[in-house]
Length: 300
Image (cartoon, rainbow, N blue to C red; front, side):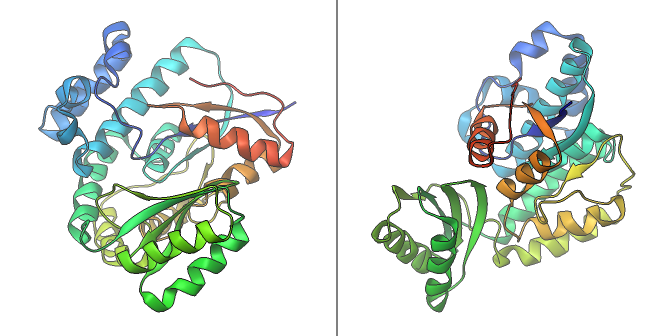
């Protein structure tokens, strides 16, 4: 018998109108979204439902909006379906949603914390300090070699290993641009610069991690009702290690492919994506296809 995992999206999944349908249909969702409004002291509900899009895209708004939407959907899902959840994972920001869902991280504290996380990350770097690029259809080993070759030009690192054939690189402008050129020459189907507000998930965010560590000192992380897989290690996080892993997460590669592979290897064959968008479902399908280990899937 297989096992069920829930997965939560990260930044970039937001859209104007997110959460409005469940807010209007479910009292549980209304309570969660209204409570977030009170906690944050800003009208996050209005930003989610009406925008404007440029304000919703601000990192300090995007991060709490996605977490609130994800947890509202998760609680509605639990009420609607008898689910035996055995593990969770989240892509970057989504890891906080996973920790809240498991009961490891208190929702109210998480909402305020991820808003602060967004502010800290944005203050640490800017679009002038670096960029990111998506590389499609290139083997992981070749991509890693290209990154190594370009390090002589400045900071460049692999930011996201999303699934086979989809990796994101990040760093200073010159080495990232050179890497995009080299990836195309070496067979990438597509290599494009991304419109982002900074070089996230690189060592350029080490300072942000230190600041987050100080913020986490006042947060209690407890053992959850099911384990959460860490982005940093691609393995289950022990409660005592979660804070350190969250600090490292902002400056480390997101090992999403490794995380899902670990779950599949452990017998997980059903994954439910909870939150805005369907991106993770696409990643999981590709990872599972490469491993031939997923017999069924569901998406919420």
